[in-house]
Image (cartoon, rainbow, N blue to C red; front, side):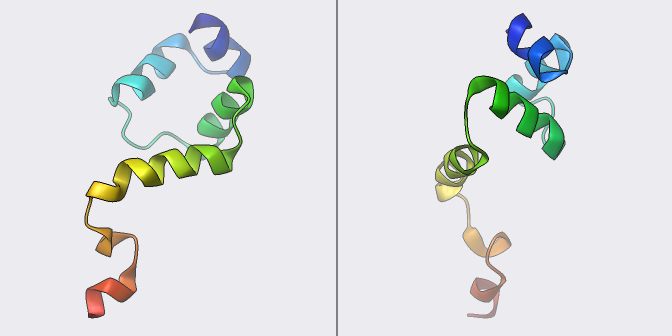
Length: 68
């Protein structure tokens, strides 16, 4: 974890907080840097996030669903 954090330009504590959920909305550049170090595309990261959110009401993500 130390190597990933340092290579991404973030502190190990920040990475720990992101992993544990203590940072609910990390900054986009932080996520992009971590993804790059891990060899992940941002599309792959987004797909994982979207898949994890499938159990959540999609109305917040899709305003059209609120109207129906």
